[in-house]
Length: 109
Image (cartoon, rainbow, N blue to C red; front, side):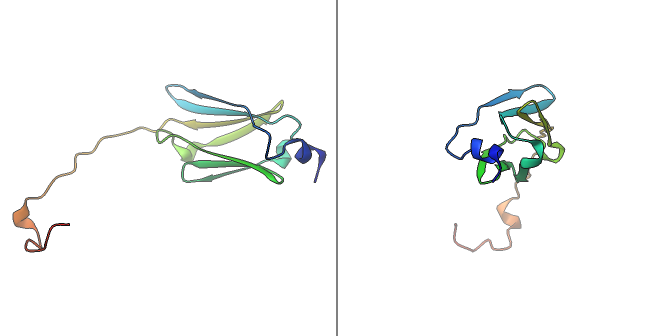
């Protein structure tokens, strides 16, 4: 384990700042003493996990974030995650009449 990994232990609370603008969502995580090569950022659904050796931190991005555009940069001890805001649309779902039901005689759920 490198000295950088020893300084970033699971018991240490990482300070984060979140900014939401009209076009992007930004999360900044302070990672003092950690090199970019020692960081691994993973995305599963809307959950971002940051790993540095044995230490890890996970958090959920809001639904209004387009995770396909997520990028990460590391500069001066700050990991910056940036993703564009998703374009949310509303779709009207048509409701069929009971007369069209295939199982009209089935008991209600």
